[in-house]
Length: 429
Ligand SMILES: Nc1nc2c(ncn2[C@@H]2O[C@H](COP(=O)(O)OP(=O)(O)OP(=O)(O)O)[C@@H](O)[C@H]2O)c(=O)[nH]1
Ligand SMILES: [Mg+2]
Image 1: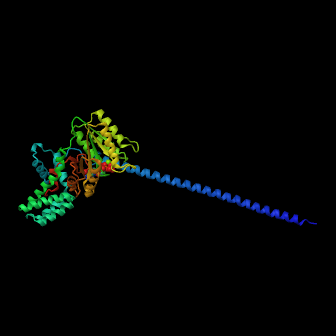
Image 2: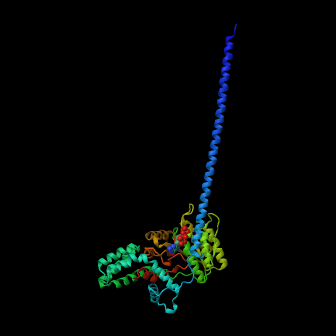
Image 3: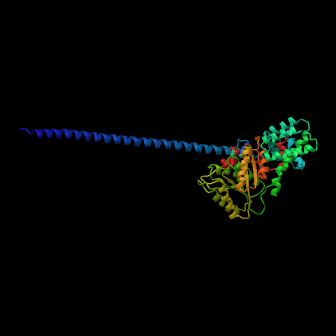
């Protein structure tokens, strides 16, 4: 008798075997597929990494190219043949309006004919041209409005608007208008006399903080180390101004040294080295990434002491560095100076870009609060229509203006002279 059960079970077993084999085969295929997918993913990831790396390299190259370009720009501006000469002796120009005006300004300050230099004429010409934009919306308009007629209360309203528009600031404008109003109540004031009175009033405002400081001019004090810190927000012209100061100082026979304490911007040190070379002044720096600015100042003071330096010029960063606050960083630098050279004469000079107008005034106010400022340097007076901000800084922040810059060349910085400034701002032609 056939063992059907047994037959059945063999068949069943065969079927089971076939099923299992199929399942195993499927699992194997599944595994192979999974492995293939894994390989695919790994490959994709590798390609992604490759692309990221390529992009990073591209960015690195772009950055390098930008830095190279920045250095070339700096070099072009400062010292490379072919670029306009910025530090050669200026040549005597034509006997024109510029010359006549500049000579008159010098004569009015008591200069004798044989004391006048082409340098001074050149500078005054630059200053007057630089303030042209400020002047255009101001004196020209004012004179047009006034004509030769005496001043009236209405013309004072016009003047008020013009002063505010020139970024002179509310306080300063109020002061000047009130004085003029008082004068008008007492006597008839013609257009020309009005301008003359205005110049006198503006000069008084600018001179007040200078007189309060006890020093008409800022010069390094003899027999001790002088440390001048240049501070301000980014791009206002700190490094350029420092370069020009180094030139002025070494040309005036002060032993000068530069501390590159802006360790934030990669090209800052190179930028300073170019200026240093031009003025024959050494630059103390630390090239390592994220070097501590206070440590650079520490090294610079050591070097200054060794070399009997008269003036140490310190370039600082204009923007926030990692998490550190700009003000904390300045405070740390100051602490190092006070600790290492307590007898040093320290100046904290706020650099302000004249073209920023009221914004510059805001910066001055916030820096003055926390950075113990002792003076201001106004830059970019060439071509700005907002030169009036210098008056607002004097009146509202009570800072003596020490130097002014009107151009990118090494000689385009001068000690501030309120008479020349006001004459240039309100020049009639
Ligand atoms: N026209 C004109 N340009 C100026 C003057 N001073 C500086 N500059 C230009 O302003 C730009 C910025 O100058 P920097 O000296 O690098 O400014 P900074 O404050 O050191 O900038 P950061 O270090 O980035 O904070 C440069 O292109 C300078 O050539 C000036 O008096 N007149
Ligand atoms: Mg700088």
